[in-house]
Amino acid sequence: MMATLVTIQSIWATGTKGEVVVLLPLPPIAVGLGANPIPEEDIEMLRNFRGPNGEFVRLGFVRPFAKNLPDEPQFIPRVATIYRNKMWTLSLVQYASTIFIDSDILLRRNLDHLFLTDRFTTARDNISPLNAAFWVSNPSCQVRDS
Image (tube, rainbow, N blue to C red; front, side):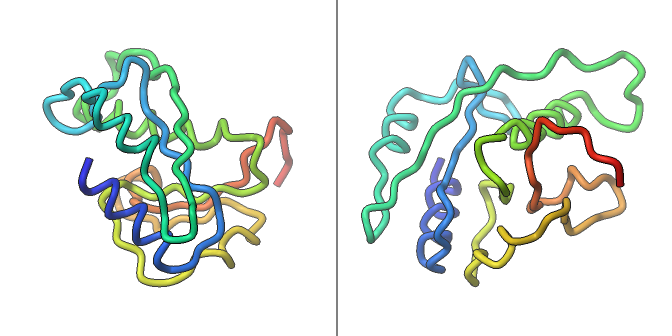
């Protein structure tokens, strides 16, 4: 939880204006190794956390994706689950643009300009774009040709 709070503080410290939304699985289970339940006091801490200008954290609770498929040899099951859970950011269709940030990232610069992009943007690695700790997307219910 401490890494999440530090990430949120770094977002606010850069002056980034976007809302901070933390998506938690239902039931609240930590996504890292061990997958322990998230203590209610940690969830309450997020609810009560405030930035220097009165910013707050919006919590979203999402259902985890289905169990791993038997033919997923490229990923260990826990990693595949983590990747699929990151996809929930694409369901935030009430926002024109979202920036997904892993909870262990420390921001050093304002990200407001990234909200203006109109396409999926990520720092791709050799494994998967979902392995990136950061991406920009434009959630939508529309199907687009590109």
